Length: 495
Image 1 (cartoon, rainbow, N blue to C red):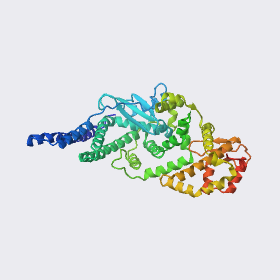
Image 2: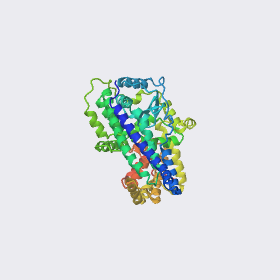
Image 3: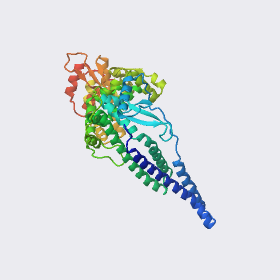
Image 4: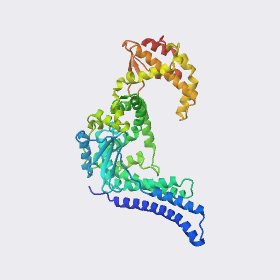
């Protein structure tokens, strides 16, 4: 495939912007150094303040624009062709379809993202190609959608974007350092002005690059696969951070390693996650256009641009399998990922645990510790007393929920009320466990105990959700009593 005809124009534009910045910086620095010389040559005297201003200001500018060495650090485990033949077959297939060489190095990253760059050499020349692939990204997409992402990234190689990248990136860094070094000085103003202009212009170039990469990817996998993949990433991409912080991290910090990719898949299937995904998609599609400082067009703009493209004559075969099916030996890959994040020795100390046993092995000890620390709160309390206890906290809980909905911090009194509810929920969970009821703990879903008596009138009980419902008057004392009696815990002491 021929080189993109826009490469020369992009390179010239980026070079002009970069030269303009360095000309501005060197001009200001030169003028500052010239001022004491001019005063001396004209009046045979130099004011010390002028010398200090010239040396500090000019020196700060020269130090800011001095190029920094950019050292590459592996962002995750490097993948081996022999260990992952199906994945590399997909990469090679897309590389051939886009007329590009396959990357020299492919790394997995712990993010819903994919990227390409060039490392080594000088400012993009004589470098090697590097690709990063998000393991959770592959959990979101079908094989065809994933190949669309790969083709989009190869589009950045095809368009010469990775050649321009180092130039633009280093200039942005020099502008930022100049602004920071000249803080509280009038000399900062021209750099702020040029920096804003530079960002607007170069981010406009970046958006054009995204359109071109989308067009290339659509010609390889088809417009439908490209569009559905974009929608999946925009809608569910933010869910990984929620999953990682609320589900994965608590288990990992407790010393256990669950199956991370499988857990993310189960998390995406939860009702709460599906509701957030639907809401996120509404917001993403409602944004008509990108901000001038955005590096990517909006989802609506990208989708419209893809729809306006001509239908490709020939595309890769459609494959609706999950992209994660291209991976072999996921536990080993996930271990390598954790070793990159936390260190090899820390990763080796983690014990493997299945998600179905997380409640019993990980959470139960934490519940016991919480209840032991709050023994005075639970002293003499029975499960039957919870409706009255929870209702006493109802005004505080209502205020705390409102503060959280509005994004405000709770005051200590409200935090204490929420913590008390968590302790009561933990005490109920312990009571259920000790009477032989089995806990189910799917990622993204409330903790549920299943009644060991399959003939009982109530099959499940959610201890934490039920205590919350009692505190907000969503569950009455009668319903609580009948449920707890079915589980045999109504008269149980919580302490």
